[in-house]
Amino acid sequence: MSTCFDPRCRQRGDIMLEALVGVLITSIIGAGLAHVMANVMNNQRDAKVENLVVERLRDSLQTQGVGLCGSGTLEIGMPNGESRSAAVSCESATATVAMAGIARTVEAPQRVDLTVAATDLGSKGANENDPDLLVSTKQ
Image 1 (cartoon, rainbow, N blue to C red):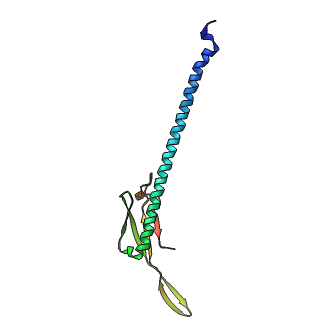
Image 2: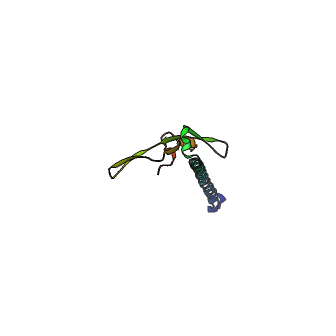
Image 3: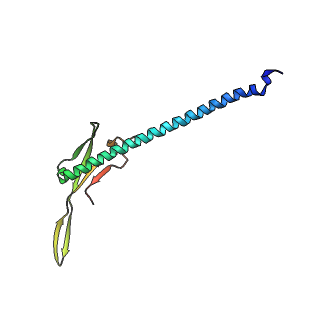
């Protein structure tokens, strides 16, 4: 009997083909995992930058407070040497309180809003339609 019709001989090519398909599937899974990890690391970086900006804005509000109202912008220094720009807006409010027929006008503490545009945060895929980061003294 000829060896080319031997069932073992015909199966050897099938095993090689199955192994090739297995390696191909494994490499596709590996590439998918690498893509997912890249997205996770990018999201972590974006969250870290946002956290640093919020931390710096809160520190500026705590240390300078209403003193920020004189300037229109606030520069926020980042650890890597970059800086972010925050818009400063202030608003004062008055209320009239009447009691026992006597009316008095009371001024509430001035509200300070610090706003950083979403595009200035450096987030991947951020555009003008995304909400801005806002830290305020409004309660």
